[in-house]
Image (cartoon, rainbow, N blue to C red; front, side, top):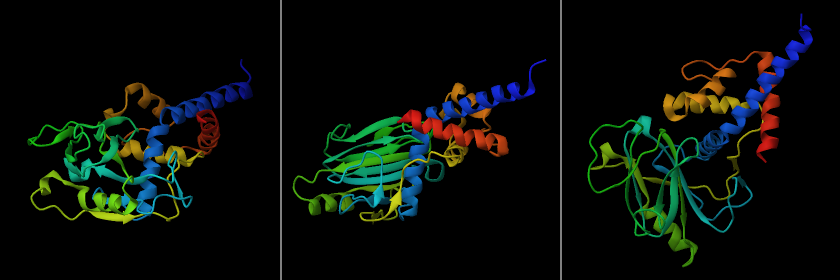
Length: 260
């Protein structure tokens, strides 16, 4: 018979490597989730609350790949809560919408269908079969929580660029189009908050939160199967025992080292 200690080491290694693979497969999802957590904590919680770096960005705010010379505006849709959502963007924007796994859902602004002239976009929930009115550029992401990322040109000065965003950028549910609630603009410049994904066990807790929030078929059966092997299953609690928690903590360290 096989040596029990050897068998245990083999299974530990299998589960550790499964965890590492899940980490690597879902960096985009956890990154997007932690950007949203950071924005929520900075007071920009809700699709109609736009985080604007009115004084640009500095080292107080931890953001992957951001710079200190660009005017950024961020928000998140919540299509499960709000339904089809309108995003009105002003002229001169450059940006995009990404889904909850950081997959491209569509360009906006200069590289989008409005060609930098501004326009109204309509973001439809996954599987939406209702009425779609005319007059909108359509975006059809596979998830409910989707990241809106916009840059404003400061070639003519920061103040007019900020005014362009804070008067022209509007987000509201389609059902409220005739009388939308005012869009709020939250100046997050100089605020200390973190949007960078973790490299410890909490990575898997964040990933589980995304899985529970999004449609089952937002990801492929193959990716879902890998998650299930470490205990992340939509509709079920994620409660790893002490052994699995230790192995997933190690997997997060390995995944973070590999991802770099």
